[in-house]
Amino acid sequence: MTVGVLGLGKLGLPTALTLALSGHQVLGYDTDATRMRLAALSPHERGPDGTGALSDHVDASLPVRFTGLAEMAAAADCIFVVVETPHGTLFEGITPLPDSRADFQYDALARAMQDVAAHGRPGLEIGVMSTVLPGTIRSRVLPLARDHTLVYCPQFAAMGTVARDLRHPEFTLIGQGHGDPVAIPKVLSSLGEAPVFRVSYETAELSKVIYNTFVSTKVTLSNVIQRMASETGANSSDIFEIIRAADRRLASAEYVGPGMGDGGPCHPRDNIALSWLARSVGMGADPFTAMMETRQAYVEWLGDQFVARAAGLPLVLLGTAYKPGTGLESGSSAVLLANLLRLRGADVKVIPGPRELDSDPDSAGAAAFFIGCPEPEFVNYPFPSESVVVDPWHRVPARNGVSVSWIGEVAARPVD
Image (cartoon, rainbow, N blue to C red; front, side, top):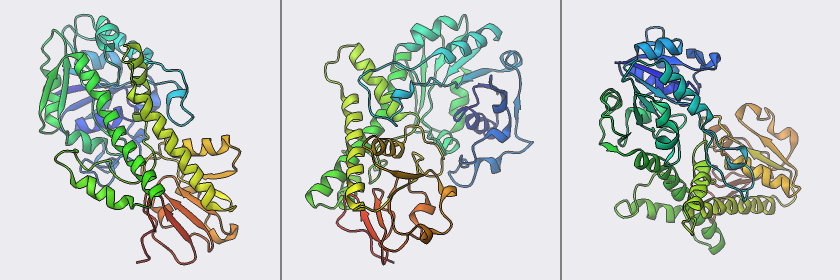
């Protein structure tokens, strides 16, 4: 089919390329002309099988063409809108949690819908992939769709593995109103075999944000396990192994394990937005705020552990990406840690990524290192003698002459 993709950002461009790799003719458009080129693809995006680089699968023969909105709307069988619905900077999860709450910002989505509806042929199917809170599609987006068939079809892809996640979906979600879409379900089902759920707009909207916050719950409970193990003398690695084995009653083992607080461009902000919704509908109890408060308390406690174990050595934070191999700091708990330490007056040197590492580690002498993001270059770094390494991820092995602390563990793994 001929498929349009409006919005070629971190999710939109790899989505467009994945659709093309699946055999569709793809037309791409973005109001930012710098995004309308194959070279704009993040080098961190991996291939459709989760290995290699997605860029290795992209060449001039791929059926992707960047064009104007009018041509896209006239030629496409359906158009996917993948524009950002940002949350304010206060709600990203890299600064202390504020008392205020807010919905996402929908200005870009509204403009995109108005433009597509104005140019599209009658009956064009429009699929919105942007994350929104329940009620948004029916109240704010549907009125802009005119006579076009509007579908809410959010995707469940992680940055860095967009192509793999789209090609191996857990399910396909179709939120629909009175119309009966044909092209969009056909396109999405062509990406990979999975159950298809055709539901109301509101059900699809809530399913998307609850999915993200469900992941946050697993990560946050893992953080709680890690802290409690540290406080009580238990071994968190053993506990994680036990919990992962309970895949009949406690769900999959994904996201259960040692590490930092939940992060990324979606999860912290979605929890904070849902806390706004919970207050708006008068739920009384607000588990989403509790989740974010627990996340922040855990990161603050990690800061306490870092300073205490440093015992006066200079503080160095290694890695600010929210997960390895992405280079993205959106919602990063490591950035939150750095900000919290500085708010209490601590002097901490931040090494954002491997490229900023000192080529001569011994030149600066011993220091206290905190593994904020377990990039391989940080895990395998030749730490100077007499240094302290605080590792919440349990990746850095024990080393002679260096004190390695796995948070929540009695001792680090011995030298191989």
